[in-house]
Picture 1 (cartoon, rainbow, N blue to C red):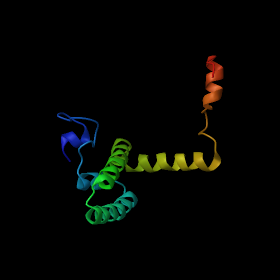
Picture 2: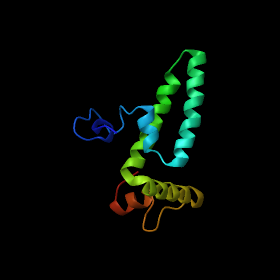
Picture 3: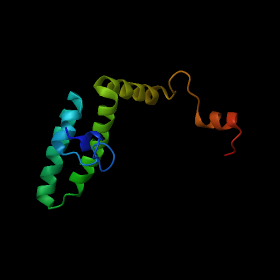
Picture 4: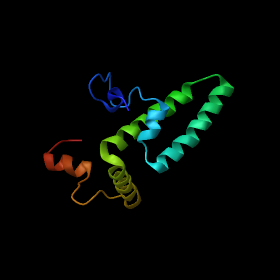
Length: 112
């Protein structure tokens, strides 16, 4: 992986901003790599049929963010983050010690 991809010296933007599909895939968890492969094949086939790369570019941008998060947190950390997010969505409550936005604003005396 190049320094520009990882966000090191010589980077021209955020990490993974110019990452190739192969660089993105190499940074993903095994389960995300499978999802990436499926989506990549689908969008490339549609791009070939439609002569339009817009969906390919959208998919790359989305997966670049996933690669960035995975790289920043490590694969195990990324999986833990996803697990916490799933728990929050399922239970509709935040992790222990968190407060709602409305409660925080009230505690700080900020008006709606």
